[in-house]
Length: 130
Image (cartoon, rainbow, N blue to C red; front, side, top):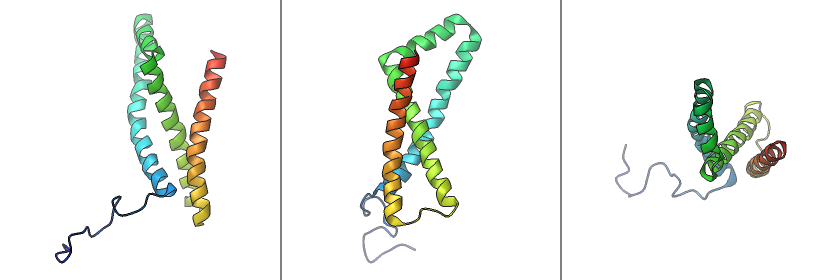
């Protein structure tokens, strides 16, 4: 049923609510989940190129070695790690733990900080090994 007396939405949304860490991490979790679909295409392209021979594989490797390719790979690795940490946060909630407001806020901030730190750590290790 439409609200005919006032010109405002029946269900408040982002324009009404003040952004809080848990809300922003929920949105980021959904976005990274969607980004992982596209990132998985990168993995498929890499595997297909590897199966097609050295020339195809070298072409994909060359592109992934460019500045743009590295930015794409960095973003994909961050999305993967962030989504994993968000999933662990949701798993904890599914098990019935961590619902205190102050704790959920700290956990949301830790998810973001942890995903950035782990992504940087993974890339540092990758460059050391390389």
